[in-house]
Amino acid sequence: MLSPSTIAFACGLTAGALLGVAGRAGRFCTLAMLEDAFFGSDFRRLKSFALAAAVALLATQALARFGIVDLSRSIYLTPSIGLGGAVVGGLMFGVGMALVGTCGFGTLVRIGGGDLRAIVVFLVLGISALATMRGITGMLRVLLIEPLSLRLPEGTNQTLTSLLGPGFGAALAISIAAALAWWALADGKLIRSPRLFASGLAVGAAIAFGWFATGWLADDEFDPVRVSSLSFVAPLGDAILYIATFSGARLNFGIGSVAGVVAGSLASAMLARGFRWEACDDARELKRHMTGALLMGIGGIMSMGCTIGQGLSAFSTLAVSAPIAMLSIACGARLGLEFTMTGEWLPAVRRLFGAST
Image 1 (cartoon, rainbow, N blue to C red):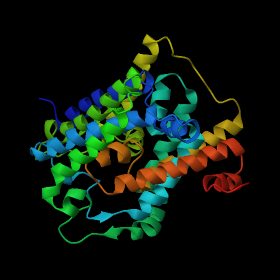
Image 2 (image 1 turned 45 degrees about the horizontal axis):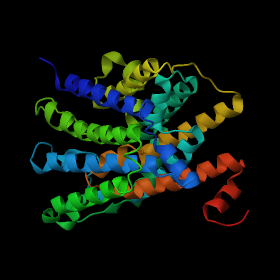
Image 3 (image 1 turned 135 degrees about the vertical axis):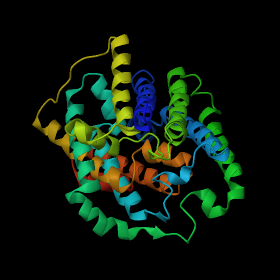
């Protein structure tokens, strides 16, 4: 009989592979959606993300409503709102992914396509995430960021259902999901982009499956597994730690999802004959990628998630931190993208706020 951790790993592998295919074949990329919206007035990728959020929200809340998954056991529904981490960490993560050209999820997709730069990003991001969870930068997080959290009243957590009352839960989830789905589909542009449409549905389903897998399939009170879904900051560090300490660690859903994304992307690249080895052009490009990866690793832990972790997984639980973190990530990404175009930070800040340079 398989242990809960092995079941969780297998489910993570499956969900990750689905995301890997969506990222490679379906062109699902969170930085690209922001870049298209900011500079090209093209909202199709953003609409694909909105569709994924709607599907994830409805399916996840249905699992919670019928008692299949206890979302209160997730890391997102804490008795306090990490405002400092969501804002500062989100800004750092957004700038970092703009410097790298993708997020943690996209890094794994690139590895599957043969990008050697992404392997460097993976290592730096994963190690910096570990350091911020348990190491030297973790001390700074505890001293400077955690005191900026907003403590909630006794007996409540940061889900909107808890703050507004359980009677609002179902209606609120349906209303938000319906609004997102209507915005994504109303003009028909997303439907006329079948890859983006399919990838949005697939990613949303994968998020809900993650909660189902860890909250029900792998649930065992004698060998508990953390209730979680897809995110690509801490799991990258966990994957590195597992590889380095094989005999002293165990598999989990996050490690499975990391391996799954690479495998799904690799399979898609091979089938489309799009696999090719790539590397940095020069030391300057390598420095930019390493700096961005460092910011993503530290910022992603401070904000308790990335564009997938906060933007979809946390959002599907109706956590208050999700929109705060995503708005901060978007602002950081805009600043980072402006910097990549100007090469200077001050003009990038001025452009961000609409001032002349």
